[in-house]
Length: 187
Image (cartoon, rainbow, N blue to C red; front, side, top):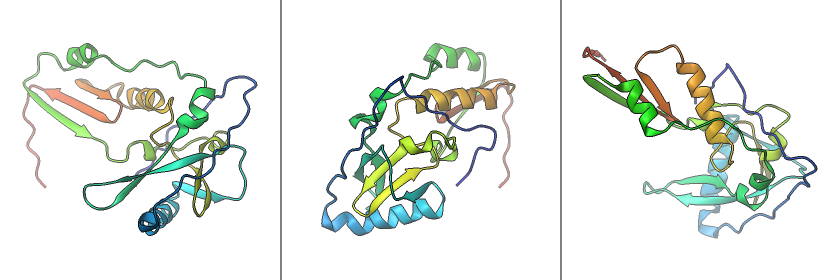
């Protein structure tokens, strides 16, 4: 798992908001071991950390993958999202991306795997990202899907990283590259 070391994501709550602590969602007995294994993997990667107390908590949502595994998500729509200040950074329109790639002969597209999880959250924001599971509370140390401000924050980070690279455009976790010379790759 990669880690961006140039910046951290910051969350701002609206003034005078009250914390929201939601109970855990039931996890089917047949899925509990898979959830526990995924929680342990996330701990091993330092993506989450166990906590004993939090004023904020969101329930987890278990999504079964076609491969038989699972992906854990969190339902921050149950409280946190409506209490966050918006992150005022625009996502690019298709026309913005097309103009950066215009007049090119060759095109490539890269999708960054687990891209959000590669951005740390600043220490002052981590308490907001607590999840409530059948085995206890965990807080996210890195960005995750489901928080309303994270797409704009991620776009801003990608735009900063790719700023001086010509003929490159990003749309959240997708990178588009164009050029007029074919590049030969040897692996």
